[in-house]
Image 1 (cartoon, rainbow, N blue to C red):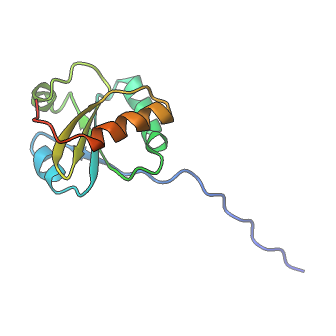
Image 2 (image 1 turned 180 degrees about the horizontal axis):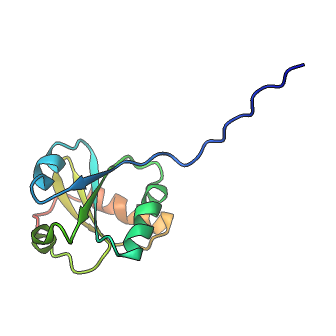
Length: 126
C-alpha cells in the first residue's frame, strides 16, 4: 500500500518588485498597463521594509505592478515628487499620476483610499 504524496500548502503569492531609477522612472511607468504603485523607501527604513512586505496583502485582489525607488540613489526623483516622509506610495494608472496614497496600513482603509485615487481623474505631477 502506497501513500499519496503530501499536498503542498499554498504559500503567499510570489511578489515581484521592480526597481526604478531616475533614468527609467517615467518610461517604465508610461509602459505599465493598469495600476502601478511606487514605493519610495530607503534601505535602512524599517517602516519601509514592513510596508513592502505587507503591501501585497493590503492590495488584496486589486491588480497592480509594484515598483520601488531607493531615495538614497534617486534623490532628485524624491525631490521632484516632494517625498519628505518614508515610506511613501504613489499611484499611477497607465502612466498617469493619480496621487500619493495616504492610508492606514489595514486592508479596508487602504483599499478604500486606493479605490478613491483610482476613481479620481489623473493629476498633474508635483
